[in-house]
Length: 237
Ligand SMILES: NC(=O)c1ccc[n+]([C@@H]2O[C@H](COP(=O)([O-])OP(=O)(O)OC[C@H]3O[C@@H](n4cnc5c(N)ncnc54)[C@H](O)[C@@H]3O)[C@@H](O)[C@H]2O)c1
Image (cartoon, rainbow, N blue to C red; front, side):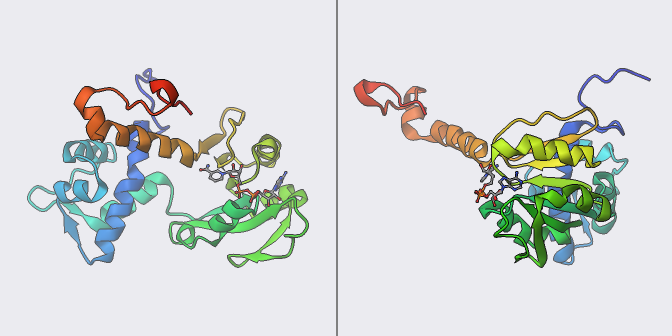
């Protein structure tokens, strides 16, 4: 076996490419919905928001090179990418924590059309038990192990307070779940072989603020952040 020189998925596709596959899939789905059957790499790159050289390189990792003068077959490429991401079979999802965020996630119809079935909702608050969100009844978190086994849950979504996240993650892992999407503001510790993705909207907002600041006329004028705090010091939050 050759040593891996950069982060790669088990099939040898660079992780950076894997991270862009959902962008291509979304762009191809839009093109398909518009009735487009073939598209050039340039058009697909624009629709996905990347440059076309990067797109061609990414797709070459999938063995997809398009046809010279014609471009890519939209449906075929869509299938190839969906298969690569593992979306040709539906995945069952459990959402744990049915507060503001959990309810919004459970109500989101877009998961279903992308191959994710929210099959169970769990919460510790007994006032929520039996209430129906997005067509699924909320059950006690006590049922977690049974739900995972009976409903063949593949992915756990954590939308609960940070203080409860590790314990629930441990229970999910012990029950056999190997993929966790964590919205709680805490770093989870999981054994090797378990994949955790963390979603943090405030980090994304901070990144936007960083770029926004660099576009501001005063920053561009002298290359320095604007002093906003008392005594001319920049306010740091
Ligand atoms: N990642 C992000 O971008 C983002 C955005 C918003 C909120 N959050 C985080 O998501 C989490 C949920 O936010 P919210 O606004 O929905 O909070 P919320 O207080 O409205 O809901 C939390 C829910 O978790 C339940 N809960 C608490 N302990 C539990 C346990 N041990 N087992 C099962 N359920 C339990 C509560 O009963 C409640 O229904 C918080 O940690 C918040 O910080 C993250």
